[in-house]
Image (cartoon, rainbow over all chains, first blue to last red; front, side):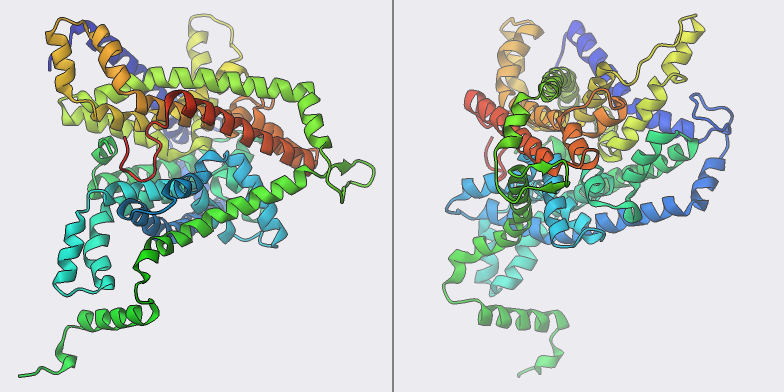
Length: 266
Length: 314
């Protein structure tokens, strides 16, 4: 379709402004991590990989990254089955009270993160669970669960119920129907949802901050604690770890389901 | 001729065992409970939040005794009365509300053209590029992004370096209100675009073409056709951006440097600086109430938009 020149100019200048805003921090962090100087500078003062060598030597950063990974894996292990079942149930069945259930399942989004975090901190603290990593994994699963349900339910809508009937009339029992027909149909949603959950959990900052103690800080909390004191280039190098993980996740998402899935109208 | 069961593929036998077990444990006619059973784990998981809310509710009703540092064993509304009468709370709430509204407006103004071009561009390369540029910051996390802004806006940062070249004294670009709002807009852009894009996809391109062929300028087409039809998406995106920025913690903490606290920072300080868990809980509940009221007002005025979980509604 032809669009007028003035429209192109207006839209593209806004898009370019947005692109700059979106990408500036990423590129600056990337650039700053390669500095050979001892202070954060951009453009960097010479090129070196010494800060990458430095972070590999730093036990506390490696440990913090390991803990973030554990939290993210627990989050996926918890939310994948939970969200998949709920997403299928919500999109395939007529449920009495479906609206109330939806409002309830959206609570993780409607309650502000600070509220969820404080509530979980009080509840987990009372149960004597604080100081472990797995409650943080559970917490990140809870606060992001609607993403998982959303992803699954939007791909389950495309499943023709006749397919399941066909499977059953060919002699498949309910279990086999579920695993051979229903589940494969929602796999794109499950992949999308799980990747989102993994990344959001790996990056989760506020709820982590509330649930960790000094012995079990996760990487985002570690970075936050460090930038409040003194900013050294090793932090930029650590941040690049997040950038690389994000790139890998985007590549995986694009390869497995295609990023365009997010443009589809429901 | 009958084959021996052991010659069947292993997967068949596994399935047989599963089906038999399923039939044994599942009551006859239990089909109508299936969806509820499938929802149970999610309902239990979200239940932890409800339990958390009950804890917040309980501690919001207990006041701190400053001489013993113990909480009262009776319930009182003193914390709520205090919250509504302290001027600094009013300042913080006003700062957060105003900030959230500004951030929402700016984010939507930038997200709309971005989503529009992304959906409408004939080039799949441009579309992919815009998608990747959107997902990269989305997947990187708030702390790292705020850290990037610290490098850009700091006293020895890029902006001040460039200004120095043309002879301008270093400006204090960080730790002020605009810096926080700017950081929030950057944080919210991916949410805004991803909420808007499906709504724009749903608008048939032919309608725009028809409007154009009937003589409407692109501005007219935009204001009379596209924007009204994109309303559900705009509401959904606006709501998400509004509530997330109203309740944000990291950007005010990092880019505001303690001088630009939003409500979440005030709550955090009550818990971890002044150790007044009761008052902090009260503020948390008031924030939840404030958010819900805002959402309620917007739902009442504009409708629920795209925020439905069952995937079937527009």
